[in-house]
Image 1 (cartoon, rainbow, N blue to C red):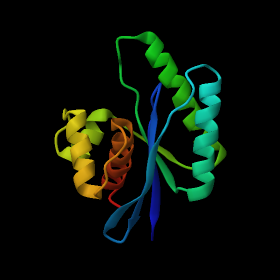
Image 2: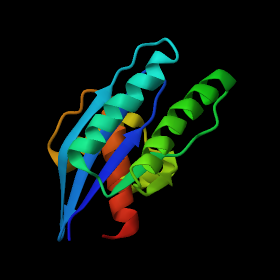
Image 3: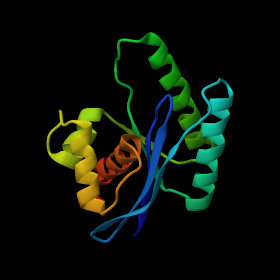
Length: 155
């Protein structure tokens, strides 16, 4: 049975996404990219919603893997990330797609074997595993998040 996982790395200025397919013992990258919304609210939330909705309708993922919130020094950043996560949670609910969250350390551990790896290390392992050169770290992180989910669920 094939599983198609939508991995999302929510961000204030760039939101990475990926679709990984798990069939038998093979994991393959179907599509990945970065959403770059306008910087003004609420247009940016509408942009993320509509772009992710188009992707969900096109690919019909069975599950969504999302990087969980982390604690930063800037409260405004946390609020903005919470708004973007709210958009993703709404889409999950509207399309009845189960959502699973992973900490940055879980994602890094799954893809590099070390939970405190640097972004460059995650990027490098994504390149090696999937033979791609992601446009940004956000895109590489989205691929790593979907990979983490597949490994964690042992599909």
